[in-house]
Length: 119
Image 1 (cartoon, rainbow, N blue to C red):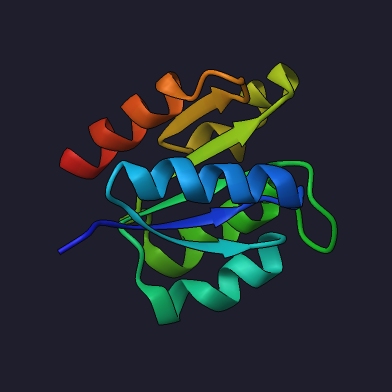
Image 2: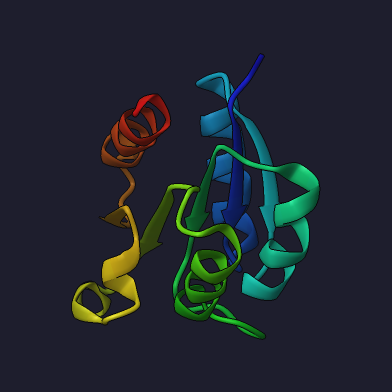
């Protein structure tokens, strides 16, 4: 059975890239365009891991992370995946299981996913 990942990313081309790359790694990926949509899909998909962009319209990744922590008691691993280093020190951001800066090279993200799903 494939591990399931819920990905929240507002940029369509990045969402497609991550879906393709992670699908090739053997994951079943469900995508959302913002934090609100991710929360709506959370219960239906029951993912093994969530990846959240931070800067998104409607509901940003930090707000979605706070709500995930409230709803799921922190049981589901969450990776904040962003272009901005400054959010690393945010109090809500520190509750994420990992913080990965966006890069053309997806190796760090893939390694964090493997690490968190296996633990």
